[in-house]
Image (cartoon, rainbow, N blue to C red):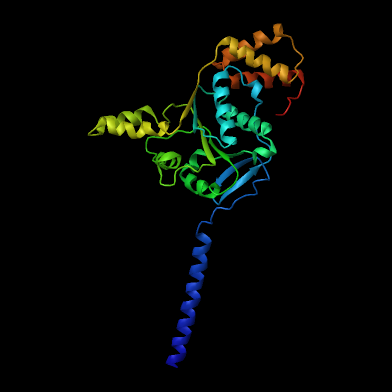
Length: 298
């Protein structure tokens, strides 16, 4: 009887352990899975579960429509072209005024370089967008693409860090500071309204409470130093704003004379308190709607 009870106890215990093991396996994060990289030229990194989601159609603006940023445009395009051909290139930080085409330039440069790549140059360049809140999972993404024969631009839009946020340390390690470092087939592009990615009060607090203020502030600023290419975007002039509007009108074949749209475009910018590429495109959307003309997709 005792032996039978012991046998039943052992079986029950084993069954319980199996159920616990199965439950833990279901709760455990799944290892990242590599997508079919030939399925698309652009992907979005999904952190949970970790995988690359193909993007069938990228929301982008044609390169020639990005007016008023010619110097930044040429620098980023050349940097991207070098990287696509296996030459040395820098991580890039596009910082400055909102609505001036920072993220649009990254997507346009990726598309233009891919258009010029010949099959003999190797695989097409892949663009991977990572969301700001997933920056801590960046090492997992790097591990996933490190062994691929493709080359990748990892792109984070509107990158910045709050006062109590320490995830910037993960980014620092991935860009240059870690043992493995950034994979040779990966380049990191980020856009931000801040030149140093961290709020001024955060850096001021570190300076005021540290025994050596210089060392404390050095750690914060060193994140931006990981980007070899800094491209500044500043508010555009009235002439540049009007050139943006004119380029959009010509591109979309909108039937309107300059004498009619010019005062409208200026009033549109005045009521919004800013002149930028984003403001120009918003005016174009309103104008095309009033004219009953659909906009040409990129």
